Length: 333
Ligand code: CP
Ligand code: NVA
Image 1 (cartoon, rainbow, N blue to C red):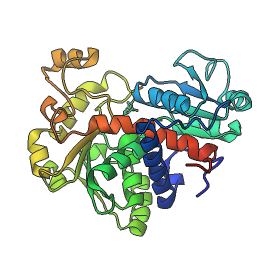
Image 2: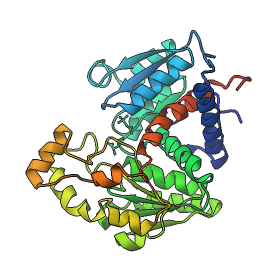
Image 3: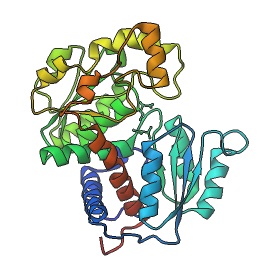
Image 4: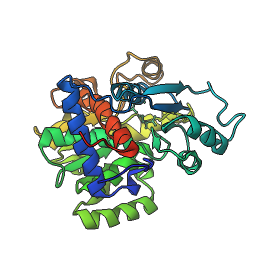
């Protein structure tokens, strides 16, 4: 498998075999890290990390992965560079492509990361756009595979805003890898029809299925994975909070939902999460709308079934695999 020179913009561009290769590579790199075995194969190389939206996991994962690989990193924070304001994406890509071996981009429209990739001349990695979050998918699939020992045939239910980056990306990766994907939410939040149709094609090849349902109990029955995300994503206006809370509360992940899925089910969340009032926004929404939590109850979030911190750790191992594969994997891995 040779992914050298490839961009990593959405998993639509990757075959099931290529995705599985990235998961296997992440598993090997994770084992090396756990064994304390140095794997700094890329000494003397550098990568740029552009963040037009904030981040904890994705930024730290890219930085730690790069440092483990012996590379240098430059972090460009939201507002801390000329990008978009004084310099076009194409010019930025050409400049950074002269200095760095790879570029990570987190920001708004998918067309921006695509434009960056078009002109950079080095691999570009999507660290989240409004439409897709492909590095998160590898971490999620690795976490699920570690837990169940397989992926094919499992039922993954996504609850919440399934029209956005997380819902879209989970539908794509499940369809490609043969998991039964359920978007369980109000109709308004179903993924768009064109993407559903495209994923149905992938599903035909992999044996997966795609279901869109408004019925929380039927949708989550016997699920293996219950997944949710914040109800309002980065970059969305504050005024949508009220309608999101009203419309998505029936799809909150509660103990009842987990019991309906069954004992073997696990809970995943890309994080950050509003499962209590210990955040500025959580507290503000709690005060305004009389809530204790939002997309998931604290009880579920902290339960044995919740694997969210294994999932967060796997962001680093899987992002490292993406860097290694697209820069060219050394023979010794
Ligand atoms: N899950 C995720 O992308 O987290 P950050 O926003 O902290 O990077
Ligand atoms: N949907 C969320 C995901 C955060 C990792 C957002 O875009 O803010």
